[in-house]
Length: 71
Image (cartoon, rainbow, N blue to C red; front, side, top):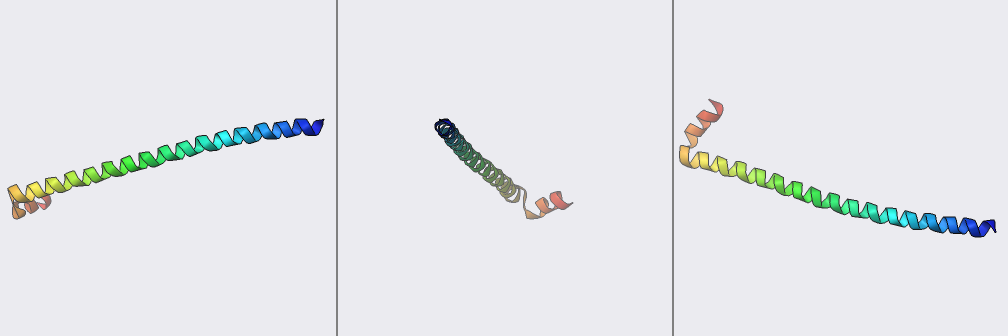
């Protein structure tokens, strides 16, 4: 009889292990989605910085912009 009880315990442990593996997989998918969102935010930041730089060069001028930045 002890072998049957041990087999049942092992089966329950395997089921719990499978459930945990599924939950870990879901968490990794969420982490990947979060990483992609952060990457998009960084891209937007650089687009805004570039747009502001272009505006400064276009409206103010190259020499005046250099004086304001380094002056």
